[in-house]
Length: 179
Image 1 (cartoon, rainbow, N blue to C red):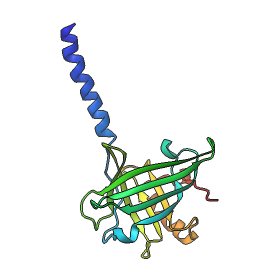
Image 2 (cartoon, rainbow, N blue to C red):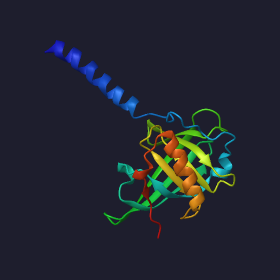
Image 3 (cartoon, rainbow, N blue to C red):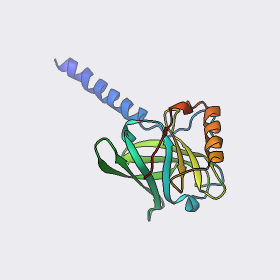
Image 4 (cartoon, rainbow, N blue to C red):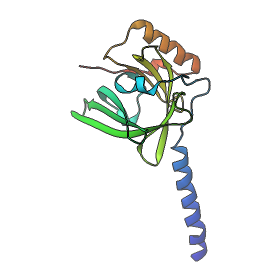
């Protein structure tokens, strides 16, 4: 029995560690490039989620916004809000974002459940910082953001085409309602 424990405990810890490591992917999809000469001060503020892929943390959510503000230590506070139209309740998640490398490259990692971090990569943004295309660490995560609850068709098409070239299946995007 003691021999089994000597084997089971390290194997269990190893598997658990591997699972945590795999959930902490802060990479960027192959073919995607983060925005350079990124100005975080211009990026701060409120963004409306225009489109996203369906995943469990935002399932059945409309009226989704993200508010970014600078923390005293230089990290970025992330305040995500939305309305679950099935459960008929408002939800809010507060997290933190940090730059992966240099603050002029729009590659960040974000955490809502430390020590688990996820990739947050701004891969396209207009010159006035009104519209942004954000990729996660894989082709499972993509967001289109706007400073207003709608987006011009020209920007929408630009972002969709860019996402398709990287390999995203944009037919699976959920277009978020704001009312």
